Amino acid sequence: MYDIIIIGAGASGLIAASQLKNQKICIIDKNQKIGSKIKVSGGGKCNITNEYLNSEYFDGNQDFITKTFSQFDNISLLKFLKINNLKTTLNEKIVKGTYFCNSSDEVISMFLMLTKHCEFLLDCEVLDVEYEHNEYLIKTSKKTLKCKKLIVSTGGLSYPILGATDIGYKIGQKFGHSIVKQNPALVGFTVQKDQFWFKELSGLSMNARVTIGNKTLKGSLLFTHKGCSGPVILSTSLYWVKGQISIDFSPEKDSYLPKRFKQAVKDMDINIHDYQMSPAGNFGYTKAEVTRGGISVDEINFNFESKIQKNLFFIGEVLDVTGELGGYNFQWAFSSGYVCGTKLNKS
Ligand SMILES: Cc1cc2nc3c(=O)[nH]c(=O)nc-3n(C[C@H](O)[C@H](O)[C@H](O)COP(=O)(O)OP(=O)(O)OC[C@H]3O[C@@H](n4cnc5c(N)ncnc54)[C@H](O)[C@@H]3O)c2cc1C
Image 1 (cartoon, rainbow, N blue to C red):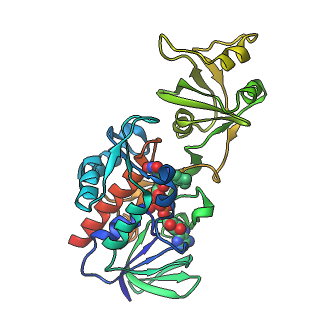
Image 2 (image 1 turned 30 degrees about the horizontal axis):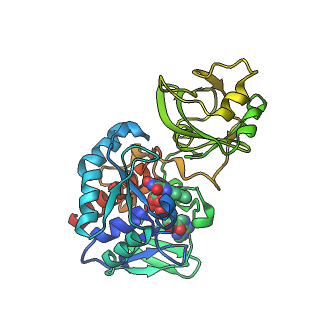
């Protein structure tokens, strides 16, 4: 019997575990190694947070996000990393305010050190959870485990190749939680017939400003063989379900338009400052960095415990909080995990 079982050895589960002391803890993960998304993130350098942290860079309950960051924000995270001898560097080449680590491996090594007091059950998939006589029964592909408290840090549906499953949502549903519809986010758009000219520009990247609803995003746009991508489009996808977006291909007064672009639009009757288009769709969960939607935080307390089911906690991407591109999603995973871990430790 464990005091606490954590399902998911990703960013949120690992930081929560690092804060739990004097308890018998087991961390279960489907992968053979911990931190699989940390490993591949930021081109192997893990874009861990952002200088400009604010709930407006997130899709989700603004009040809940703000309250979470008031307890553990980007400054707290950078301090936490520094105390643990991890060097971070501000690199604004692609997205403003982004902090990177020397290497993702250093982050993983740090968490291996900080979770030495925990048992790990890796290469093991959680299949179901039951609650009987004030205990959780965790049914896995290897064996059934028991615990008093359960932390669900199973992430979203993106990148099934890195271990993603829908078990977190299933556990939520089983215990009566509402799930906000999930969609792939931080992903490129596929286009309609009217944008087939994008194909000619495949590989070209240029600065653009995109307006979607009341949001305006700026950054690099990449034309691809089947649509468009690049930082500004990835962040736009966080707010898009269907309908039009407007692209300004020349956002600065003295913007220089690439020759290839000028050539491609030469005979077309388009407004380059307000190019309206409705994406056909997106490239789906195999390419999406994150999953928008998830377990509604309306039924979650500020210590990340379920309001419906006692001793059940949800942290990280499995919740209905999703950030733009630029380190915001790790920040959310670390903030929610840290707050949950420290509060549980005190209770
Ligand atoms: C390619 C890529 C690059 C990214 N780069 C960045 C970046 O640079 N900066 C940034 O902020 N964000 C980045 N992200 C997003 C970020 O990785 C996630 O938002 C973050 O990892 C979420 O943390 P989490 O702990 O909630 O979930 P995860 O890190 O996804 O961890 C969940 C864990 O649960 C395990 N699991 C799932 N189901 C089961 C099951 N049934 N049984 C057992 N274990 C299970 C999974 O194997 C996984 O290890 C990137 C994502 C991808 C896919």
